[in-house]
Amino acid sequence: IQDTINSIIQQIMVHANNTNRSTDELLQLLNTSLIKDISIPTAAAFNDVLLIVNELLEIQNGSSLFNSAIQLVSCKDIKTAHPNSPSGYYYVNSRNIYCNMGELCGQDGGWTRIAYLDMTDITQNCPSGLEELIDGGIRVCRREGNSAGCRSNIFETNGISYSQICGKVVGYQKGTTDGVESNNINSAYIDGVSIIRGSARQHVWSYIAGHQSNINSVRTCPCNTGATSTVPSFVGEHYYCESGTNSTPSK
Image 1 (tube, rainbow, N blue to C red):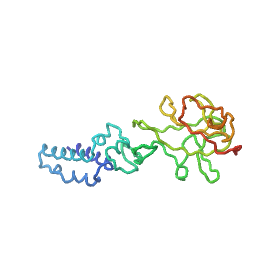
Image 2: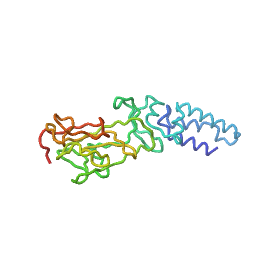
Image 3: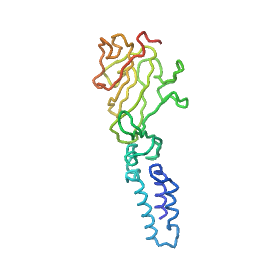
Image 4: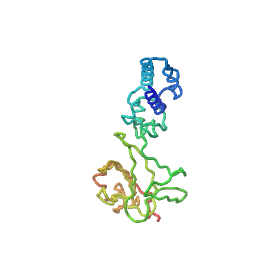
């Protein structure tokens, strides 16, 4: 019986944020039960436990959330079960995740944050493979070193299934940017930021930095007047390209 109670208490602590009652209220259900009275027959004690479990399931408004130890829970699951849930951190799948419950990319809320980097926040640092640069009062992350090549970072979904990806990239041009570089996804095919997914490296979206905005060299954006450059077939229309200058970029 004690093991059963302990298991229920753990579930309460994990899922308190996803219920319509506070942790204290839910624990009160256990504390006021007769299960601690050793004079109560075992059958009666189990009945009390079952009543508590049933009420918890009802409060949860969805058994999938209650059984998150078996089925991974996403922010979309939380939003579906509790439409008025606010944006913020939720403790599910044995870790804290940030959920954006507002509309993003024209789609309803319930987005699970996978990666986040805001260099205007002085407490945040560049991830591995990138170095900090401060220029003109702007603090950014850039590829380490001056030679051509790629630097990659992996952001895990931790097993959560997904059908859409939404994000935002802010970039600043410094030096000579090269636009589109090659047709090989395993090389530096653009100058900018590229997002891919899966072990098969499926292209999602790229932010391409062109050399200048008013010329038609091979290093400019494909949308420049008279430009002859094209993006690789695996990029398709899933990109945005621009240059921050219409003159020779500064070093």
